[in-house]
Structures are given as structure tokens and as C-alpha cells.
Image 1: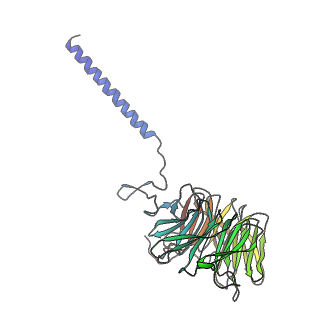
Image 2: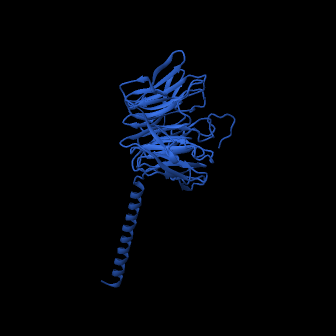
Length: 421
């Protein structure tokens, strides 16, 4: 082969190699372009800005406000993500009086109490107690005369009852104040509930069914526990009912044995009146109280998904109606002003369906609307005033999904003549 022929062969080989490489690169680019991309998550997804830059949405509520998907007419925000550990009970209390907004308190499956403090949309968690098993009972009241203001009280599966105290410099402290061997603590109430004794007391409902009275009148500031009565079923929720003028308050309870009872403590012992009973277990209880001139209204849930409404009038006593037939396993109901018209009767429901649903009473009866869906089954709902930019209450939820979320109406909702962003 002469030099000219060799040069021609070299040029031809180089050209063919270049064509092959270019074809391979184009195919790879086309393959990458055609590959489906994963959908952006609602938390931690990239969102475009005004100048087409992208920035990551926050996923840590301690650093910034974290939005969650919600239905039209509602906003949802993350308060805490507890991972795979469920949060069974949630409530809102003024734990730190030096802060304007009430704190959100959650109890989890590992026996921890999370006190969640808000600041301009962010939420910081102060975690206290390490009981090892679930905590469920939760209340807030001024029981201990040695401590200024109200204290938190909680207990759970191991029968341990704790007092949690908040200090002005933002610190929490806890101590074990009682133990109930072989019993689970499911429900707690604090206040002046026993007219036969001065001061406030703590009522402890246990499993197996029993009611105990706990008072801070032992030596050196200790608490004393006394059995009030055995009960026919496990009380799963309870609330204090206002008394008529000149009469002490009473207690409404719902139990696993399908009874809604009204309890009164008296010198002769516990007086129990069955307001309603059914052959299906009952789990949650809420009250609508609009002042002394309005009738007392209770809402209660059945495990099969029924929600009932009971109204008490001086002339007719208790009347009952079924207002909703929902999914099995309702585990949270909450009352409050959730409509722009405060006179409209509304009720929020949450449970094993994962959905938070709003029941609204209109001229033609009750209607239902889904406003949020959590990532797992629900277990508790509460209502509180946590956002003053609207004219309604906020809804707080928790459950098997391991997080606490906050549902609120948009700024300006229920308010007239106010400019909004």
C-alpha cells in the first residue's frame, strides 16, 4: 500500500468513528429525554420564582412554614413530622403564658410529650417525658398550689401519671405524680369538678374501666389518688359540661361499651345518668356551647362511622338525630367556628378514612365536604384560635401518619373590608 492509499484509509476510518460517536450521543440524549421523571413531592419540591429561578420548598417546620396539600377554601401546614411514630392525642393550651399564641401539645406512641411553640409560621418542638409506651390522656389545669398558673397532665399505657410544668424562660420540667399498677390511663380531666371538696382535682379514667380522683394534698407537695368508682366500660373521651346557674359542672363521657353518660360527683358517691346507649362502641365527644341562652348540643361518634347530635332543652330533655354516616373508625371530632357565618353549625370529623371532613348544617340539612387527607389513618382532632388573619377557628389533627397538621381558612376569610396579600 502506497502513502496516498494509507492516508485515504486513515481519513475514512476517522470519519466513520466520528459518525458512530455522534449517533450514540444523540441516542443517549433522546433516551434521557423520553424517560419519565418522578413527580415533585408536595413537601421539598422545587417551585418556580418570578424570574423563572427555582427554589426548594421548605420541609422542616422549625425553619419555615411548610405547606401541605389541602382542598379549595383551606390551607394546610405541617406542625411536626414524627416519622413512623404515631401521635395519638393533640390539643392546644396556653402552656407558656409569655407567648401570645397557645401551644400545640401532642402525645406519641413512644411515650413522649411534644410541646410545639409557634413563631411567625414556624414551629419548634420541646419534647419531654420518655415513658416508653404510648401516652393518651391529656389535660391542662391549675391544680398545684405551689406552681403559678396551669400545668399539663398526661398518662398512658403503663399507668404512669405525669405533671409537666412550664417556666417563664422557656423550659419544661416533668415529674411522676401517681402510678396505677396494671391499668392504662386513657382520659384525663382537670378542674373544680367535685363540689364536695374545695379546690381543683384531676379525674383519671382507666382501662379496665374505673374513675380515680387525684389531688395535690399529700405531704411535701405529693399527689394522693383515690378510687371514685368502677365503670362498666373504658371511657375514651370526656368533657366538662357547664352547670345551670347555681349548679356545679358535670361530666359527659363516651365509652367503648356504647354509652354516653353524664357523671356528677356528690357526697354519696358518683351519680351516673345514661343519656344515650347503643350496641356499637363510641369513641369521641364534642360540645357546642353558645351561651346560657342557647341549648346544650353534644356530638358523638360511633365506631361504625355514625355521628350523632344530641340537644338538651329544659322542656323536652335530650333529643337525638343522626347527622352523618361516614367511613368506619371515626377517631376525631371537633367543634368551632369554621364558616364565615359564625351562626352556621359546623363540625369537623377525622378517622381511619384519612380524610378530614367538614359537616355543615344548612337549610336543607347536613352536608359534608372533604378538606384534607393525611398520609395515614387519623386519631384525634382539636380546634383552637391559632391564626388571627381570618374570622374562624383552626383545626389541629394527628394520627397514625406520625405528624401534626394545622388547617386554616385563608387570610381575610370571614372578615370584611380587610386588604389581603
